[in-house]
Image (tube, rainbow, N blue to C red):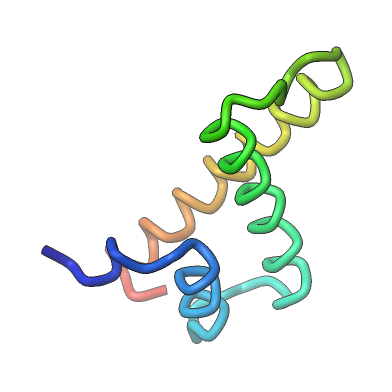
Length: 81
């Protein structure tokens, strides 16, 4: 089993931030992954992450960030950047 699976979200983010394949600024990367982490935390702890229309809209935007980064990381794996 891959040892990366046993790392915390912050550790994964730190590893990915150092990647030579990262194509956006490190501050923007940090900001986007922080939004993803916050949503993950709210969902994992069953908080009201979409209790208002504004919160639901923000949740949808964060899910789009998850899709974006999932596709980006897949490219890294498939083609090395």
